[in-house]
Image 1: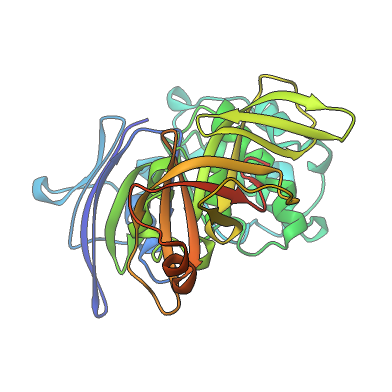
Image 2: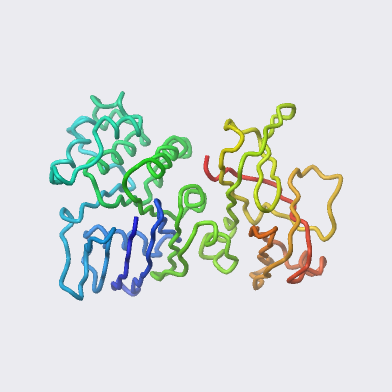
Length: 358
């Protein structure tokens, strides 16, 4: 996938200025509410006419105001999944799914009806109407309808925002499968760090209508200077790890990465599988001598690479653990009492490890 975006558009008192190029399977437009994420994908979809724009998907120019190009939405071949499914209530699931195919020329269609239904696990739902579906089922049908229009790019605007935690857990594996097995690049809008950490290959971080960072998800989410924009106390690092072995006696799994070995509750996956984890800054303690006699199972050696500016009573710190970034949020008092400084060798005590890839 190649997505080129260069947009400028006035939004009330704020000007949206976004310029980036993305090449990953799933690009996350990430930022707090009001950052301009939805406005940006509406411009990509052709639902909003911008003051100035150049938008190119895999070499196809969707908009170039300088050259007078502005394809209407139905000619852009963009699939759009909204926060709510927006299914047609009077049609069955099967009829909803096939609706979008009529807008795509037969020569441009890809993917089969049966293949999309199987990938999203919605075969048992085909004869139901939307009123009889759960929130997660509605979103899976909405994704299927968008895919069956054979889009050049799939836009997903906070697709989990209206779901409770159980329904989110239900639908996330399908989004991952779509990312890994689907034939279409995805632009995914979210303000939830956990979703972005789990799904994104590329992150475009927006704040107040501006792109403040773009790049690999591991790199962007691990930057100390972006912790405020990425959610303050939700800030943390994501690590791509490999399942090294399982400990049957204690029902644990040992993961390996550049930083060392990390122990988590047993995972139902084979040795050698790649697993992404997320460690929040608030779940990392720092010691200047190797701790002993404590319950924490994960202690990683590292060096203080960066100390952020104090914010109230806390200070954010970035550690270099054998080339792997780890973030910690400490009190200013702790920083002073421990004499922490850039270049100091320390030990990171990790209290909690969250699976970012489910």
